[in-house]
Length: 82
Image (cartoon, rainbow, N blue to C red):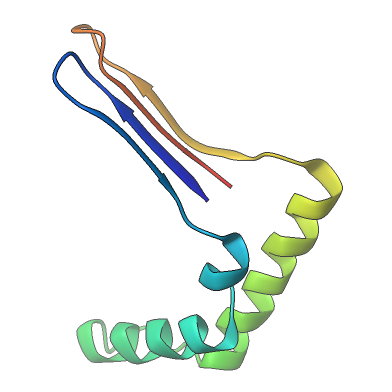
């Protein structure tokens, strides 16, 4: 995952490995956080891990996937891509 923020004052690029975000550990942490903060959501860690595997497979087949691409009137750019 690549997060890029550009403005007149700030230039920030964060690169986080997709494999790290889509791991069993991240899925279990996310499932616990979701169940604690939103009790009506019933996703277990295995369901989230299946979703992550599908995202990794899609990224491998297609390549870069832009999740967010925002350009403001002041010239600021915010991009999040897998």
